[in-house]
Image (tube, rainbow, N blue to C red; front, side, top):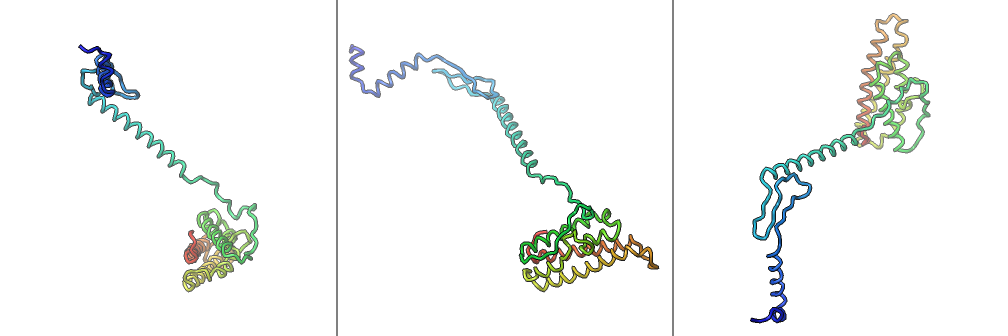
Length: 239
């Protein structure tokens, strides 16, 4: 027999490592553990002479359902948050031009294309406001004329023909733009005339009434807005 110490001295390092490893393995006790944060109820047991015991199919199914629920819940919360934050903020409606606090506007005197387009855009918004609130505004013809820019100087429609003629050279098709401008001015003139006549019709022998004339004026305003949209398109404006 060769002494153990001599064997140790003679053995290569790798063989010595294997000898120590198997000696430790023979003395390793069995142990079991349950994974953290899991719905698995079957522990995973490990021992030196036993097979690995995995969770049952039922446990895995429960774990999958829990993860699916959490994932779905998080996505639902995220979607709701995005939906809420992307909703447009509600703002107070702009006061009507008939409000006495509405300031007067100076006549357009700029040579800037950008400022002219901005004035045109604001004029379109005034016409949109007139149409959206027509029943409230059209209690008399002067209120309608105020929005058309032919009575007072509170509307951006005041002096709008000068603005539109100034922008003519910016149109994509100058012929189409000019035709739309002519139609716009014709309907604006008709709307102004009907609104003006509604002020005096009750004192004349005409069969018309203030209400009927203001309805006629509204139809003309609709056409005014239509041709404003055509010209805005020719100028590359989104309205």
